[in-house]
Image (cartoon, rainbow, N blue to C red):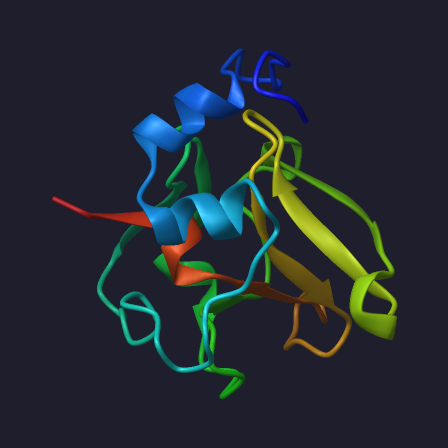
Amino acid sequence: MDEQTSDPAGRTEAEWRELLSEAEYHVLRERGTEPKFSGELLEVSQAGTFRCAGCGAELFTSDQKFDSNSGWPSFYDVLDSGAIETELDTRHGMQRIEVSCANCGGHLGHVFEDGPDPTGKRYCINSVALDFDPAE
């Protein structure tokens, strides 16, 4: 994307660079990945909502979070199926399903078919792509 092209949220890449930290930009806009077991939200277990760090869209709840021991926060379902988009990701010589925020297009992580019931899915999401709002 060039500096003038807008994303679904209507921001240019220059605006994203100004809005996001370097780590957030790398993951959300450049489809990067944070190192395993480094994310601040990995161990969060209190009640609350996980939002997209790029646009604030509600994505997951702590009720949907589980410990997958993968090194990234993992969820077995999304708050609303319309909140995310998925597509095949063949980068790095692998075939995975990429998960992006439907509102702003930010890369969140990947979804795998090895999660717990009731969905059997594991949404493996970068902490830096999320903000956490504790329940009141």
